[in-house]
Image (cartoon, rainbow over all chains, first blue to last red; front, side, top):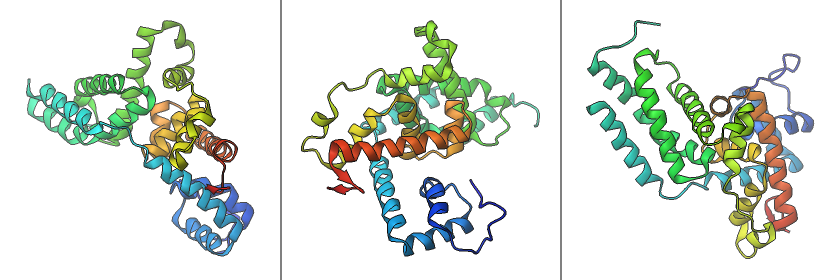
Length: 88
Length: 186
């Protein structure tokens, strides 16, 4: 979880340069909420930064949908294995 | 930290409380680092067995981080048994394990007529193993930076820099091989 540098006011608008530096943290929800709110404001107002965010968010969303198949069966077997450990 | 648990019922309760809810996450993470369903299941079994033996001494704080560290050690031991020459650099070991079943088809062949999701898949496969593993842990399995750092045994700063570089490469790959600029067909 990163915080905004102490020398920047918590309420001052975020610049393009600042947003570029923290965009990945923003996408991963790994930043201080107050600072994230300033980034959100900037992204809504700045076309270039907004497009940049959209591009990376699309990549991240697509990756998040990429789950291995047959997970349920394996997890069920592992839960059964867990029961066998504690039932002995 | 309190006294270790010794009562059988308390041990079972602790296992059910701290380990069982994490089984699914453990399996998904194991899939990411082994890239093989059978190895992943074996690794989670090994992790659960180790966790069961150690549960009496666990203080109950941050169970996922505790389990991911156990899994990391279990994986390193498994690789050491198979490939003793790789143990000089544990980080390289994780990379090697993650890259063993990489698809050799060309990126262009892989993305042909398969759309954005396929282009993403191809971009992910084209990443060096150490970058791909971080992307899989954070983006696919939704681990936090700290949790990814725990399983890989590296600082969170390393997770951040690998993630940033990996995503930049994915973006470039999408542009060069998939024809996607800013997430859309050019």
